Length: 281
Image 1 (cartoon, helix red, strand yellow):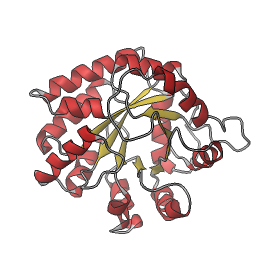
Image 2: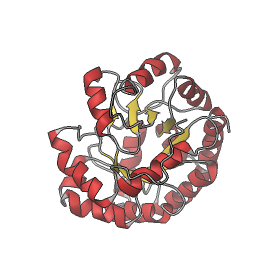
Image 3: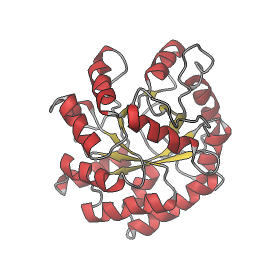
C-alpha cells in the first residue's frame, strides 16, 4: 500500500487526486480496494443499496460506470449489466446523482467512454461531475497524448483526477509517459482483452506491476500508486495482487455478477467480505 502523505500538498488533479491518494495511503490492511459497479443495475433503487453495501463492506474507492451501448473495454458480464440498465431507462443524470449520494462517504471515480464526455463538451461534463462530488475520471478509449489533452486540462481545472490505463502490451517508454500524466492512481490492466473473471492470476501480476512502476526512480516521478484490475475476482486474487506489489486492487465483473443474483445486496456483501480478507483486513 502506498504510504505517500498528501496532506498539505497541491496535486495536479486538485482535491479529487488528493482524496483518492489519501484513500490509497490510509486504506486498512495491505492495499486499497477499488470496487466497480454499473450505475442503475439491476435497477436504480437496488443500485443504491448495492452502493451502500460497497461502502459498508470496505470499498476505499467506488468506480461507478455509466451504461453505454458500445463498451469497448467491458467483458460480457458488465456489458450485459449495462444493457439491462439501458433498457430500464437509466441515463447519465441517474448515475451522476448516484455518485452525488455516495461521494460524502467514499471517493467516487466515474468510468465512461469518450463520446459521453466529448458530446456535451469536456468542461461542461466535468464541471457536473465536480459539482456532484466525484473525485476522478476513467475513459478507457481516450489514450494519453494529444487526444486526451483537453479532457485532462478540463479535469485539472475542476479538481478531478484523470486516471489512465496501461496494458501488458504497452511499451515501457509509453508506460513512463502515461505514469507521468496520471492523477490519483495508475490503472494497470492485468491481462490483454476486456474485463472479466479469470482463473489463477499470480503469474501475470508481478510483471504487470513491475512495468507500471518502472518509472518510480525517474526524476520528477509523481510516486503515483498503482491499482491492478481486470480479472481479479476473489480474495486469493487480491492477495496475489498485493504480493506482486500493487497498491490497490480493482474488482468489477465479480461484483457486477453478484449484483444480478436473487439477493443482490447479500451476494455483493459476501464478495466484498472475501476480497477484504485477501487484503489482510
